[in-house]
Length: 89
Image (spheres, one colour):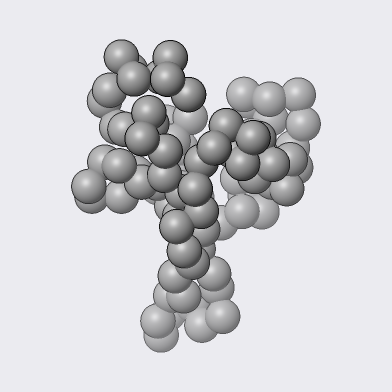
């Protein structure tokens, strides 16, 4: 889902160990319904929490989009390109 997502909505971070959601509204409207039976970002976040993903902080964009908050998540079994680890989630 993250790999196929528009990078303006969500993308892997450079380290490949975390991903960031940049536009939660578009994620809910455009991406989540392709993979789940709902379109609610809040439900998606609850799912991440139930699978022990960690919200490792929020970043605020600087000058171009003041007030916008990004959500960053990590899980030791969710690393870019490491499908062999997915069973640990």
